Image 1: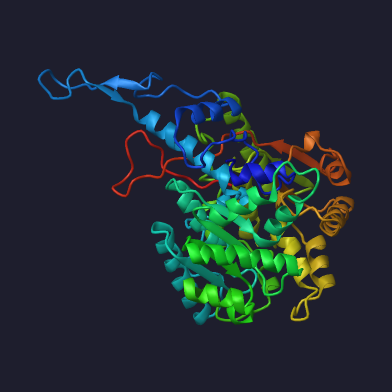
Image 2 (image 1 turned 120 degrees about the horizontal axis):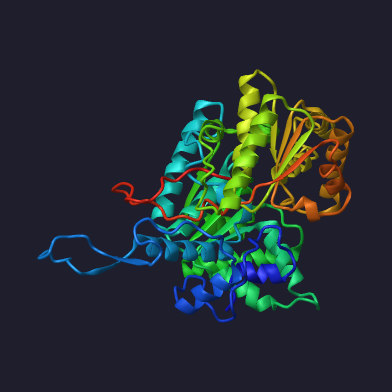
Amino acid sequence: MESLGDILKRLGDTRNVPTEGGRTQGSSPTGETAGERGAYLQDEAEPPVEPCEICSGRGWFTAEVPAGHPDFGRVVTCQCQHERVIEERTARLLRYSNIGHLSRFTFDSLDPDGRGDDDESRSLFQRAHKAALEYAESVEGWLVLTGPTGSGKTHLAAAIANRCIESGQAVFFAHVPDLLDHLRSSFGPASEVSYTELFDQVRNTPLLVLDGLEARSSTPWAHEKLQQIVNHRFNAELPTVVTTADDVEDLDSYLRTRLQNSGSVLSVSGKRSDPVHRLGNIEPELLRRMTFENFDVRGNSPSASQRSSLEGALEFAKNYAADPHGWLTLFGSTGAGKTHLAVAIAAERVKAGEPVFFAFVPELLDYLRYTFTPDSRVTYDRLFDEVKGTRLLLLDDLGTEHSSPWAEEKLYQIIVHRHNGRLPTVITSSLDFTEQSGPISSRIRDPYVGEVIRVDAPDYRIREREPASGPRPHTRRRRSRS
């Protein structure tokens, strides 16, 4: 049976699905067969790498011990071969997971105190953070995280998923509205995937993360599908993580009783404050980790040309941070370091005492939609004008947003306003704008406004976790990249 990631890809929506080569029919998401590894390697054109310092690329070596030693003359499999197998397994699980751009949301990039500005919120988030860590280490039962938009629920849920992927466990991450859209599209006459095939995989995946469960479903059909998924996993006692911005008590009684009786229900915030006040700020932990000083151009075993690309991108970013004028667009595959450089630019401007507005594009659009709700204390016009006119705007992950007409229109208005005013703007994206067309791409590619820089490097996140006893010889220390 195909993996969920590939099924969703074949449904025609690749926004939140990694774009690596697909799995073959009948393969298992967690299998380790040599045939599957070979198929994956054929799909992926791997960059040339430096030969291993231990085995010189052979994959084995003879232990250098004196005659008479038990290991004398013994052939030893090199550590690089173990790491290669783990990297291939992790890449395969990432494809299955559907986690996409949220692969950078880890426990390491999360402040254990959360985003609250009061003691109660910090205490609640610390408790939820501890519970999430424990759940990721021993996946069992259900974990329900509640709290307002922007309080850190999705980050915690994604961190659990990413930790499980690192340890070799299969996970499927689903934003609930997107999942329902995929299920609807499977009924279409042009769909290559049957509804039954997709629905059964969602219900039975080893660990399911349902992000953004809402008290009010858009249609009776959507409500029925959610009930079926929740009921099946509840009865089968399958591990499930759920996040919701609503109080559990406000959910439908059918969903509420199963969530409350299946495991832990934890709030991540003590008050339901307007989430918009957090928009534009950068997590202190990101500012601490993502600096120019710790941006390692050695990356994850890049080729000579890829290392040159990292060095060039770093130099462009430093020059821009010293004197921001016009636009700087960094594009490339996920995990290459684009967000790291963008945050480093922001950190330099913050040190200089200048305001910076940092926006993860999908969240920005969610915030703009939120301003239309009755309980928002910030008007749409006020927020939209702030984004358009801020002194330095950083748009992170442009292109991963939901491409509805409304979303495209809002992005277009922001881009046009800042293009016309030549306002300093930094953009990161996985889209290759040198090959894109359209009104937004045209302005990004305008040489009179700014530079478009390709960051060509292997994904730095697909690496083996270091053992608790300490780092192994010849294994690089993990560094943060986005």
